[in-house]
Length: 351
Image (cartoon, rainbow, N blue to C red; front, side, top):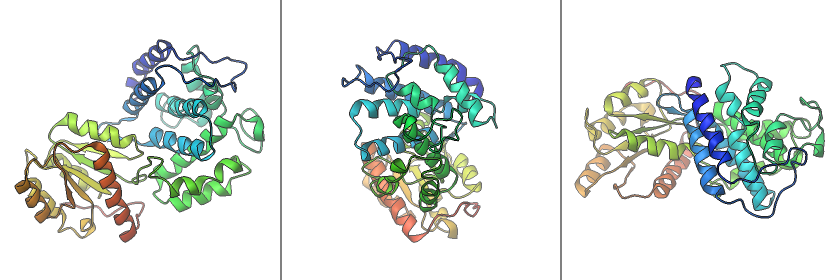
């Protein structure tokens, strides 16, 4: 993954330079124009896709950058920031972790931040982006790397700091309440207390903010068409889910032996093992009795009936929109969370 980062970052720089984004003043980074930048949405979407590719490790897609972006945007909306500042914050959240992806494993926060700043040097960025990235490790009490204190820290950097810490906590533990309590404990010392004060509203309205339900856990997408599996994985990752892909039943069984996922998205047709048989065997494993199983690309009623009889929770046809798939998955995960509170590590199973 680190070897692949350098050429992708070069392309990212070319993209930003050529996208007619307004260059950011180096001395007055807090100035924000009232006009939306041309091509903003498409440019941000491509940058996000490149960052997701950098985060990919084989068949695994990390949700860290996406969850950081989603949390930052949620804070911004709850704090009623103007659209141009929300746009700048979104880009800062996406680019702010580049150094972590390109630095050697185990590199500290200061080293990865320096790498990020170096990578973005000379790249024109919208107002506020560079300041948010450069000061995301400052502390409210002034004990950060540059000694900025309180409101002297740029607001976007203060928001990004809480979003970064929250994404880090949720990436290692699925317990939202514990993450919120930890961030609230550090309000007024490490973090801006005003930003932290909207945390509970953010999670109470997570559907509105597009935040998924599978942080700290896994969703496995099993499909014989690798492009289809990758497309779904990348889209789910964009909503804060940690996703793994499997091409066929054989690979899926290998992944399940590592531990039970929190949900399974399964193609109705698998080349090396019947999907119906596989679901039926999963349902006989105690640890997987209530596992949410969503079957996709079930082309006819007979196939859907067979999958329901085998134990699938939901069957969707090939024409289903992604928004419907995600909403269905979220609903199943809400029910699963209510019935079976998540544990840090689930029982290893061998279906």
